[in-house]
Image 1 (tube, helix red, strand yellow):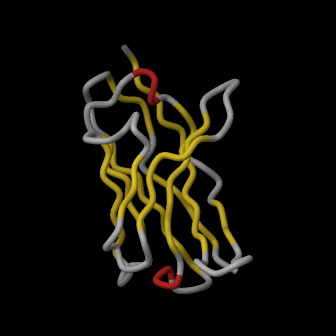
Image 2 (tube, rainbow, N blue to C red):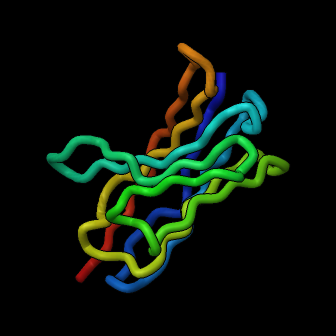
Length: 119
């Protein structure tokens, strides 16, 4: 079992920045791909960004490319999402997810952290 706890959310003005953290416990995070998703009110949860186990490969949703950066520090068992140039449409609950990259591998979710961007 992997327990994930997100932090770093809050209220920020448009154009501002936030850095989300996802702290893992229970198992070492280095065995899992990490990703961030978000869910706005009345909308489905959507993919934001992902990073491979060794941090060598990253992927981003088109809507956040060039503004968000995903990273991880396996020594600290923590993942990050740096969010710059925030827009009101980035307002959502942000969730981190850890997935073991194997067929049928388990996936774990955090409880989410609220990000609100005011115009």
